[in-house]
Image (cartoon, rainbow, N blue to C red; front, side, top):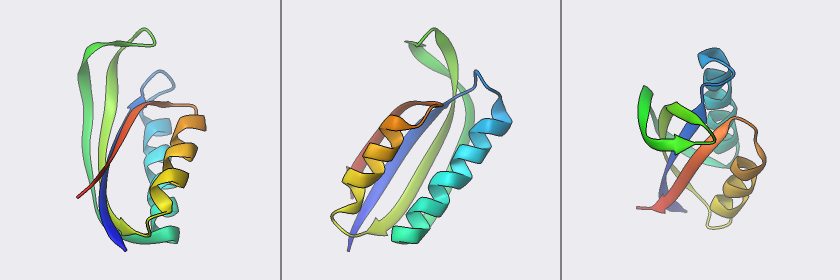
Length: 92
């Protein structure tokens, strides 16, 4: 088991409620595959530059412990999920 941090920026184009649903979806995915230490919701922030013609995003930081295979699967799911603007997975 290794420790990881994942920062995700969710789109606000569909509304803040949809972003919060995605936060819970990924929280459940992490809990199913490892140990979730913390979910730090930074909330709505202005982006430094436009991403897909959007100027604001909903930022969330997940801190968790999981097996070495999980980050690749987590990244795959993040890449195919509508509503995710950007993400970054870092080993702590």
